[in-house]
Amino acid sequence: MENHRQQGILYIVVPCYNEEEAIEKSAERLIAKLRQLETDNMISPQSRIVLVDDGSKDRTWELIEALYEKNDSIIGLRFAHNRGHQNAILAGMMYAKDYCDFAITIDADLQQDINAMELFISEYVSGSEIVFGVRNSRNTDSFFKKISATAFYKMMRFLGCSIYENSADYRLMSAKALDALSEYSEVNLFLRGIIPDIGLKTSVVHFDVFPREQGKSKYSLSKMATLAADGITSFSIRPIRLVFMMGALSILVGFFMIIHILYEHYFGYTVNGWSSILMSVWLLGGAILLSLGIIGEYVGRNYMETKRRPRYYFWDVLSHDAHEDTQV
Ligand code: UDP
Ligand code: MG
Image (cartoon, rainbow, N blue to C red; front, side):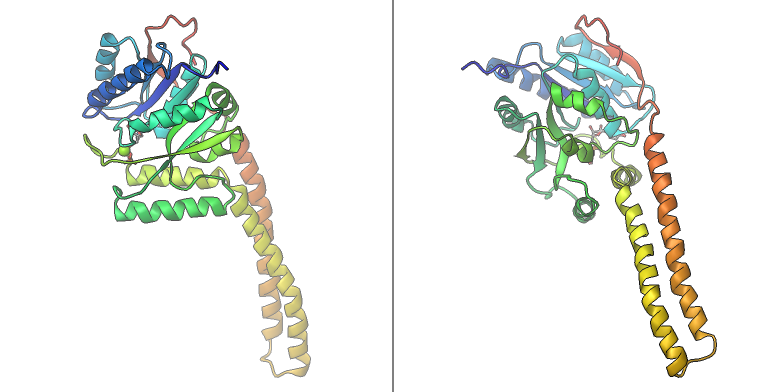
């Protein structure tokens, strides 16, 4: 039977921030990959590479312009400011969703093995809407990154996020999954956490990670901390509930303590004032935590609701395709 998913239009989305050292070589390798996938009849010749310049301060955009001039399959998008890796990926995917059958996101340094793309595509052809890339090992990472990443994924799962451990933003999403993702309007993005939440048919592909060849890591410690904070707070109802539960528990303990305190007061040998102080510590402490939890609940909800600001704005769009509306 003819599978309509075969030879679909693939858009490869690449976030680029100050990647002047890496972008040319990476683009060359991606173009070669696209040609090879085309010859193998895995994708349509209308497939494209979307380079998203995340407000780079170096020559990245000039290099993207030059690549665009030379290659019909290159599309360039440019942010006015640095909006971060997650927003760059999202912008590229939201741009792609109207033109592609499926999109794959990959970092500009191509640390992720591009030869895993065949595996992603065959999972898509056999019916998956989202294919998660999970890294084989963290051998190329520093000791600090290894420890912090492991702790982070464990905590996220504890907080109720169905994130895949060691999943990366190397991922395939079908146009349908991208449509679903476009309904999520939060500003503080943590894609690795949101995408499993979409709930369409998913599968996993394992891939190797290589050391970065050109340039340095663009993920500073503060960018990593922001990403982690976004991850935690976008599932923030759990920590707030935890405070609420602690308050309730403290009040409960307080009531048992009252019995104990009264018993000690009348039948034991207690210092004057001990009973009243201890009672107020437990009851008041509980009441304070409980109210903090309730207030937190409102603040949390409000916070979720107010995330309506635009996430990015395109300064420039370069495309050889005559799409009627290139505005996203
Ligand atoms: N990146 C981005 N905006 C940023 C930081 C990074 O678009 O503010 C891109 C970067 O160009 C690369 C990807 O995100 O394509 C991953 O960054 P990097 O390779 O520096 O991170 P690492 O591999 O060290 O975690
Ligand atoms: Mg990298």
